[in-house]
Length: 217
Image: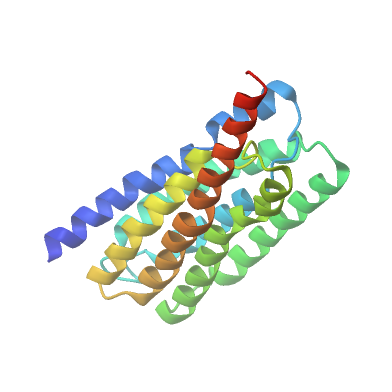
């Protein structure tokens, strides 16, 4: 059982790394066009906050046997910080820039407030679980645009796919380690990734393909 627990931790690390790197194509587009267009910055801010809290929760003196949680989330925090800064620099509208800056300020304040000298597993676990659910739910901010435009252009497939894979991996890791602070939020992430994001992508990708075929493109 311990070996299986470790293996799912490794698989979870790999899936999470791909999740953190999946927006690279999106940010290449943002940098080339020097505009964030209609992309949402919410997922990157929420992921940054989740990574910081999860990395803290996984430290041995907070939560034993969860060091794999800390390693990947520490790396994820560094990657997501770059995304947030790029998004802030190239925000196409003043309101988007202000919104992103406000979220970034909230990340800093919450992180500093929670990282006290005498952390407790229960307190950190609840905080990490809450923001993990927020991270998994954050791509849904673009769902309305997808439904209105019947286009998945601004909902990257790789992001949705790795939300599902990452959530599933850490859900099983949490179950095997009898850790509800990992299994519950990641189970929610797996369900959100599968039912709402991948399903929505499949529906409107076909819709767009049908339209292109009808137009002879």
